[in-house]
View 1 (cartoon, rainbow, N blue to C red):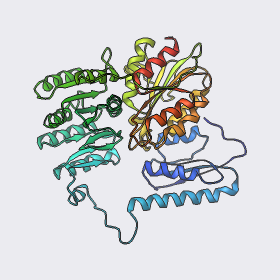
View 2: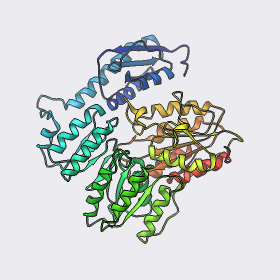
View 3: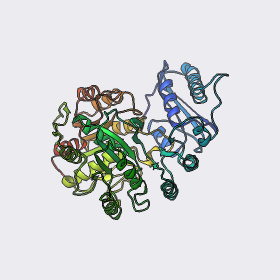
View 4: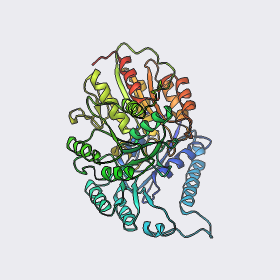
Length: 493
């Protein structure tokens, strides 16, 4: 827990039954934190995850329910409390006006997904509501004859299977749930990088894996025709690749696609085998980039794609240099991308042995609620359990920054490994918030995988240079970053 300075004044209030979505509350917190005299501000729903964060920041919260909103402020003096609370109210009102569209002449918003679809010729609906409500909205879109991208997480797997079965029967596509990345008809959806059109079609059961592949191909001068996300569970035994098959049919029918790549976190063996058999029935060649022990990493998969297209494999970009490693210490990997974390654990485990994690490769090495261990560990801050009631860490860096501060102060930390994912939908300037935290990691080297392109809003080269200036060694390739971090540990198990 972070102890507040003794002269600071804290103000905590619980607003029973008040609600705003996590992205709106993130912006409210940022706006209030910029108010003169305010040293820290967190406005959040009272979920267990958020209460834990508030506690770690030194706030004492009374009795709450997840349906309550907590306003937690730390200010320079008691004279500032009133103006800080007024700033909270103003920011919440602004967020509410933003959602409603405001103005007496504003068009009345449609009340259902289906009615919204009748107002235009959209062929796809993007569903981003709390997971408990996502299935209803997705079904509404399917009934209207539209494809669906479900950005929401925490959707029951049985509902996912039902939606995808119905979609397949109607020749429609359900992307997700928990589909964070897609590119359809040249338009990026969710978290998406800016890349040129080209001959590669991607089916992705992995959001950041898809982004890593797109960005590596972009760096090699190869564009992407489409990227269809299918959700992280699609290649699991419960779902059986229902959306992957449908996505493969779509891309196979697209004359601009010369090569299809399936990228996924470690799949179920039987599902992967069945998909390989199905892929053999298509006219378009299909390559598999399925993470797993002994399998090619995503960088190697990208190089294989380039070889198939008869393109030259470039030297992958690299910025800065890392300080010398501590003589002893553990590798601490703090990720916003689940696939980046999975890939890192697979590669690091080859040299360092088992890696503790909140998404372990083997359940025997799961972290407990403290999220700490006297061992090498890697945390995926984008996992469902870490985003309940909060925006994704690619938007809201608060949780990872808090953990990074504690990691920097831990004498057992030998090397810090981070990912930074750029693109539309992500933090507008992640290096601006991450660089000060990197400078805190005195004595231990910091290695960063920065996934992005020069055409992204944040600009890859600019972000990587800022991170390198802060003292990190930065790689475009996550696999190269992991191998560098492992080497800096000296391979100590």
